[in-house]
Structure formats: C-alpha cells, structure tokens
Length: 495
Image 1 (cartoon, rainbow, N blue to C red):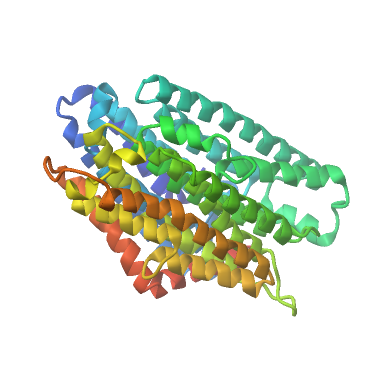
Image 2: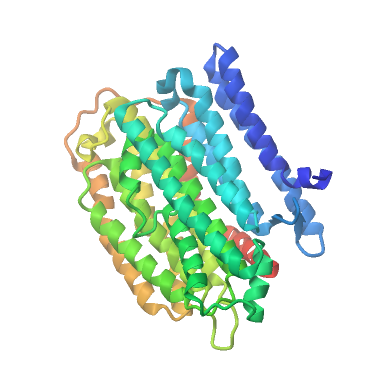
C-alpha cells in the first residue's frame, strides 16, 4: 500500500478513526453530550478529504484516480455518494441527540457504529472489484445489525437478529453469484469482466453464468428492499431504534444503488440480456406491493417501512432506463442521473419524516398513527415537517419528490418504457391515500393544545436543514441535477 492509496481512502480512514475514538471516549467521559460533537468533527474531516479528492480528480486528465491494487476508483460518481452519505450521517447524528439518551451506557456505540457503517457504504460506491464490493457490503451491514438491537428490548433484539440472519442469507446469494461470474470470466475486476463480455469470450448463453448474475441481483435485492426480497423490512423497521431506521432507510439504500449502477453498467453492460425489462418488472412489483400493503398499516414505522419498498420501486425505474438505448445505439443518460437525483431527494424527505417522528415518539411513547391524533396542536412545526415530507413522498410540487419522479418517469418514457411510467404515476396516486391519512390524523384529529412538545437545538437544526432541502431542491433542482449528470458521466467514462 502506497501513500497515494492512503490518500484515496483518507475520508474512510478519518471516519473509521473517529468511530473508534468516540467508542473509547464513551468509556472515559462522564459528560456524554460531547460524543455527538466528536462524531460531527470526524464527519467534517472526512468531508474535507473528500472535497480535496474532488479537486484533484477535476484537475486530472481522465477525471478519476485508481488505487489499492486497482480495486478502488475515485471519480465524480464516488464523490457524489461519499458526500451524500456523509451528509446523511451528520444529519442523523444531529437529529438523534435527544433520542440517544435512551441508550444510557451505549451512546458511544451508537455513534461509533453509525460512523463505521458509513465507511462501508462510502467504499461500496468506489470499489470496482467483486471481492472488495463484498467486503464493503459486509462492513456496512454488520454495524446496522448491532444498531438494530441496541435498545435491548425484545422487539429490538428480534429486529437485530432478523436483520443479521437475512443479511447473511443475502450475502450468501451475492457471494455465490460472484463466484460463478469469476469462474466464467477468470477475473473479479469489473472492467476485465466487461471486456470478456464484450469480446464474446464468455458463453453468456450458459444458464450457469446467467444464474450467477441473477444471484447477484438477488443479493442486492435484499439490500434495497426490492420485491420479492423485502420481507425483512416491516419487522426490522418496527423493532429498531427510530434513528437507526432513519439511517438504514436512506444511507444503505443510496450505497446499494451506487454499487448496483457500477456493477451492472461497468461490469455487465455488454451482457446480451434484456436487463431493462427485468428491472422494469421488479420496479412495478416493488411500487405496487409497497403501496398496497402500506395502506393497511396502523404503525407509523411499519407504514414507512412499506413506503421505502415502494420508493425502491420508483428508483428502479431509473435503473431500468439505464440499460435501455436509443434507436441509434446511444446511451439514455437521464435514467442514472434521475436515480442519483432521486436518492438525494429521498434522503432529505425521509429524514425529515423520521426526525419529526423521533421527537413526537419520545413524548407520546407510541408509534400508532391513531395516537398522532391532533398532535399538530402540541407540535405545529413538527407536524408541518411531517406533512411536507409526506407531500414530497407522494410527489406533489413544489417538493423535491415531484422533481425526482418527473426525472425518473421522463427517463422511462425516453427509454420506451411508457407502461412503467404509467404504473409509477398510478402508484403515486395510490400512495396519496396512506400518506395523507397521516396528515389528516395530525391536523383534523382530536387533541389538546396543552403540553407543547419540546426538543433541543441540534434536533431543530437537523429538521430545518432537511425541510429547506425538500423545498429548495424542489424549486431549484438545476444545480443538483447538473452535479448528478457529471457524476454519471464519469461512470460512463470509467466503463
């Protein structure tokens, strides 16, 4: 390992070191209020190194830097996801300050495990070799299993165990698929695999080879809660601590889609299989299943669990569009750009909902939607935040959710997947029922204005930041979309 290699993974080293330091400080500090401060400082240091890498690759001739025995690539695509994940971590740390007091002697472990999981997610976006991808996935997954059980209650322990077991099953599918791909291509490097596919050196008519790629799809399907591999989501969401659910719902999804885009575009882009149709069908199933089952939920966290299944379906619309081509053989670029844009918009939207729910749950000690009745009288700001986030999840202007779905559905139409765009619009209409039911309960339900709900300054900052993100990006989406186009272009060049 060279100095250049260390520089390329400096953001991850900074974040991992901070996670370990926070855990040690928890043992020696009596005042736990400093732990989130140290965690945020580590995030800032990681952001600094990420921006430095961004400046360096912008000045380089090929727009990317490769290291760690050619297993790691730092390009604008990786930079986008590193910054997105770091932003999510910072917001989760701020938004969970009040809730973390429930952990008593485990506060350092909470912040440390969040940071260590984020390290794996950042590496997932930058690795271009199958073994490295697998290790990154495990590094991101195992801390979340511990976080899910951190409350040490029966439900929390059950959630952690279910997540661990199903994560192990999905990893087995993923690893076995990688083994089959390696057996037929003779390499674990995505660019070498792509070369074998393009030259026809690999018999892709072989059912065994196709089974290997299919197993990889199954493995990633668990990670993004895609139908039919979504069975773990509602129970894990209900039993896990709410800040952990907030982090899991957006950060892990972003990292998983990052590695899916890199693997299936760079590695398997030349496979003579209609990936567009496969991902389009999975998108339609995920959207429809998530929305229909969410309509029957009475627990707010289970509702958002099924909501995230539906949201995975919307994002898969862009993945389906990435594999489609224009009549003249050109690549349709709006699909992958739409995926990145939607992931950023979904992050601020879902975090807004969860931050407000965290504070309200701390006071009413209930996750039932019926117990949110009239809560707007006690928490007008938090209720407005939930309402805005629900409107954004539906896809109503002027929120970022509307612009994200507009880009994705436009990509589907441009790729010849008009039927998928229609299914997406219909599902958005269906989703309005259960999203607006939450808003109706808060504002029209019976409730007393006494006992106003209070929260700390860090929580208020986190809430304000994500709400501003929902509205500002929804009204002025241009800068973010331009950034996503640059990031996706670097992925195309890398291929």
